[in-house]
Length: 318
Image (cartoon, rainbow, N blue to C red; front, side):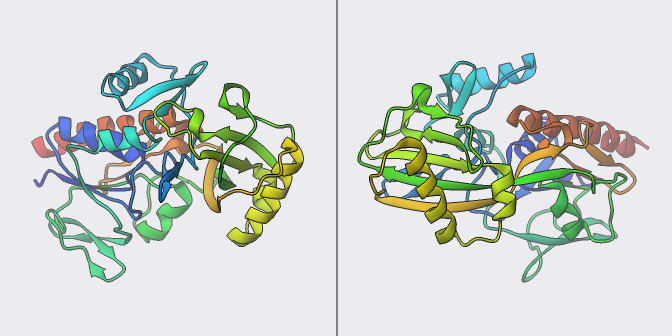
């Protein structure tokens, strides 16, 4: 029986699953539609400036994740920012890049469908069947993407679980660069505001450049949902005007760009660690399984790999 697994999505959950599969003796290929790694734990670079425009930090609760974060810190890929908030260094995507080192990751590769063949699973991209090692013989396909996107790729090959009640809120993120910006205590501010929920000095995080000063602003879930169809230019204008009003700081930024996160924050989770459909060799993982935390995404990926490995090893022995 082939021991090659396809994972769709190179966020923290997908990479955690991939490393666990590899440690159990499986070959793994990860397919990621974007150029970068880490999903919402991402870093946007524009010339000489960079922004953590997705997840702003992560926390640690379990001994297992503490062990992982200690490894990231020892290798220089994470540091504490404030209180018990940690960040990747020199950008939020750094831990994902570290996790992906021993893994075959195909970036800028959008999987559009899966197909069951006699020898195993095959994947399809926008321009036709995927041509890579293991294609047509994958013993399992893992979806490490937002729950609402799974049905579009899985098609009629449905998981043994109802994902329709998993809910997300969107988020407009505004990235700005200034020559100087008012000091933010601990490098961040959570205003009590209907439009803006978060203001952070990106340069206050460990390992970042301080000039120019880079600022990340997140809109509230309610405002982001109500204004989801704005153009980036419209969102930038409205959010920047509100930032000026809140801070009483009116300097014009040298860089300003807005990014719309469609699946930013899990509002209603599945409330189980992962999804594994052993009869088909299909699985799914992500923060949407357990809750809106990076640690939850990591735990979900490891839980799925553990369940799948047990099932696949048992099947191989039969």
